[in-house]
Length: 150
Image (cartoon, rainbow, N blue to C red; front, side, top):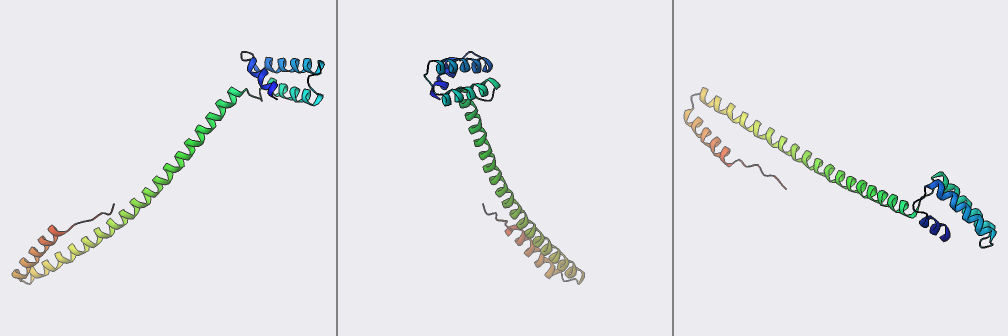
């Protein structure tokens, strides 16, 4: 098969059809001069037929196709890696959103409870108690801190 590769490299400007025909002629000449066995001749004929039909490629074409396949393979691998990273990031964001929602509901409940107690104290005319509740709420509001884990 090294002879086939050499013939293909020597026929750089020929079309695949012409290349297949030339290989067939060379194979016939080699068989006529006794340089190849009948089995080798049939191998040449099969290869020439494939080249003639455009099925077989030259080494340069194979190298190009191999590079394209490798490039596509790496792009698919990179896309899968990025997809995994994004999926993990989305899960993390969903967890943080749930935590924030819980903290929001807790703060909302506390504020509503405190406002109700304040309203009750004002209606009962317990102004001293209402003033101390307002001061406590101001202090709690200033001290309120949301912490996010990163």
